[in-house]
Image (cartoon, rainbow, N blue to C red; front, side):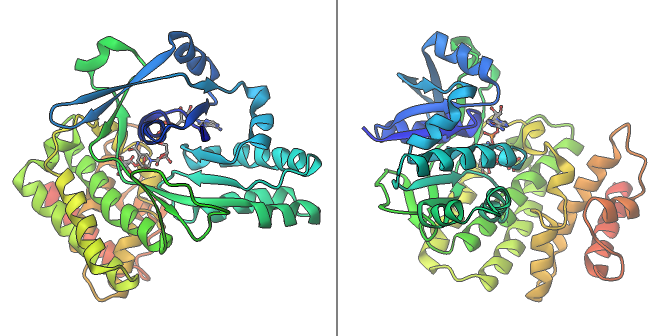
Length: 379
Ligand SMILES: NC(=O)c1ccc[n+]([C@@H]2O[C@H](COP(=O)([O-])OP(=O)(O)OC[C@H]3O[C@@H](n4cnc5c(N)ncnc54)[C@H](O)[C@@H]3O)[C@@H](O)[C@H]2O)c1
Ligand SMILES: O=P(O)(O)OC[C@@H](O)[C@@H](O)[C@H](O)[C@H](O)CO
């Protein structure tokens, strides 16, 4: 039986990744910084994944292991497949544990490849993780050689959402999770070390940078924009914003601007890209109870210069596309920040501090956002 360790047993770790690996008969082990929560799941012996299909399907997950904090390094020294389903803030501690595990591996002459799959929506995540590891082994050429030869740090595009279980299903267990329909993963096959396993609904792909940016700049941008607009309409769920025709027109406009920029910058096979667009657009019609608060969590990070709004807006300009609708998403993001009771900064200051936009250098984007904000205020 193949074995995988899932670090970060949250919506994606327990949900999408747990579901796909268990379906492929993997023996699952979970590690999470919240060990008491893992213990509670283990005590119950099972949890459920609800797949948001019509009708909703429920899958039971049992016979899994949990890893104690003081056993993590031993586990990492032994295992070959690790899925990291965390936010970037967890990278430093994971990097330190990988370094400690590499020491053990070298001592044990373990030359089995170790592949770390980074299930994160962050640009350059593998480079950031590699940098943290390299910083710890800067003076150790044996470790550096081992790292280069045997450790793969691989970007994953998680093409499904994982969310806390909506309240109406909550009877069966507090650790159950919901995932959207047709979950699948794309893993960077160019960075992967060794033989690629065959797992249904998991594809090893090339052009990972283009694919990740397509996901984050086009898909996550539109998702978060629906959240910011929905928040201004005092809605609770993403689908409520997506279903409003006037909102959907703006979401589609922003999606099309970002998508045009992405396909101008990166090469995609047209049929594959067509299928991706259809898959993403199908999500607009799904009535999944995905809370706006989840999708717009950490709004300042999401509005940053290299992130899902400003980066595609800049890419649009590079390819002579006016990021008119994406700028509307930024405007709603700024409006959301301004409504926080503790927020004192002016629009100009927020555009600068949060979005990294400079009024001279980024004249077009800042002007578009300011015009949209005036228009929103007039409504
Ligand atoms: N939820 C989605 O729909 C979705 C889809 C695609 C990608 N992602 C990405 O997947 C990642 C996880 O998202 P999520 O929705 O599952 O979040 P989540 O908050 O539900 O789960 C994250 C888990 O990581 C744990 N954690 C935090 N620091 C840790 C550490 N140092 N070591 C071990 N565990 C740690 C937390 O306790 C939590 O259980 C994020 O990077 C997110 O952007 C999420
Ligand atoms: O995970 P974040 O916080 O980067 O973004 C929130 C959502 O957009 C994200 O989790 C999506 O649900 C997911 O990426 C599936 O497309």
